Image (tube, rainbow, N blue to C red):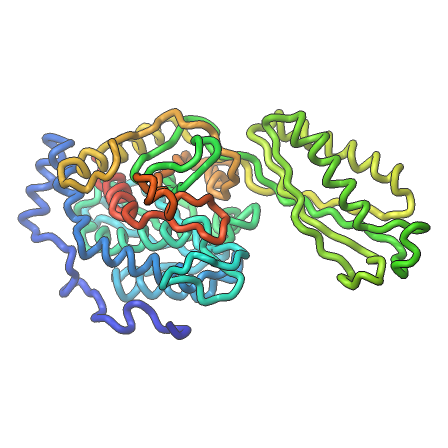
Length: 454
């Protein structure tokens, strides 16, 4: 699809008069009475708003974002499309801020009611896609390999339902589409500084998971997972730069090479941090250098380390070890100049107990609805004490920087059968990452259940 052409540019624009998901006022009043009188039955009926049309819209949106993958802080076309859908498809008034897009959906009968946030992330990864999908990324070397296309597509499709039925809302909603989640500290700090989170009393996140080592491998489609307390980890990017005189390759015996120094660092990071500290993880990336020519000794070499820890204690222990390694390096390689840049990245996402209870109930409502409507595709399960994962998340900034209580929920998208898991169970950040699209109606229902809870 050419730039500036949107999903809505080739379809009839959805308006309040032709919107396919709006309910008759008599139905709205009946559902409100049912929700208030008997929560389970009424909620199940409300979730019937997730019909084939809105699911198809979510699929189209997800595929559009997948095809137009963009790296963090470069999501120009992505943000333009999100804004267009919210404007033309939902008749809403989104605001583009530094760090992302925010958009309020307000029940006119609930003025001044506390507002909660629903968040999705926008950016893709620097990976050459190898899925073979028809909607594969058209941008070479850039791919949605962490599910952000699912997050944004599902939340946008939900917005079309919420906007048309805003008088059903039990609380007012702010949609938050954040940039650069994959580049710590992400777009949340900028969005918060731009006052995009002002007025929020709680914020919710939802992430698809195909496979995770903490979960024992492939995570079955449709299983919800969360926990109270820290659910993600510290995640920093440490840049290490080595500099020397350089020279001709024939001088390697006399001068040594920065490639030797890089190998030394790789060994020490594993021996001093990765192996002895179970709650920490380091991974040095492939380095860049002043030259790739084999007959030249590079004059500088730089590499970035993924630096992670489950909690503050392990984090500080790993930071101390990194400093010790640096001191030792300067003794072993006295003629090499060492520079380390270690900015603060993602901090652990903390799930508030009360907000997590609300999120857990919404997930149970979804699975009850799915069972009744034959949408369920796996034995219903809401895992409320899942392990903490070593993944980092900018989502944690809402609570840490601004004191907004939050819950981060995960939902399985790795398939059910062995054959399905061979297709959908590949790990995150791989070139064959391909979540099961059957998770989309459950994601839609989850957001809707949170919005309609009384």
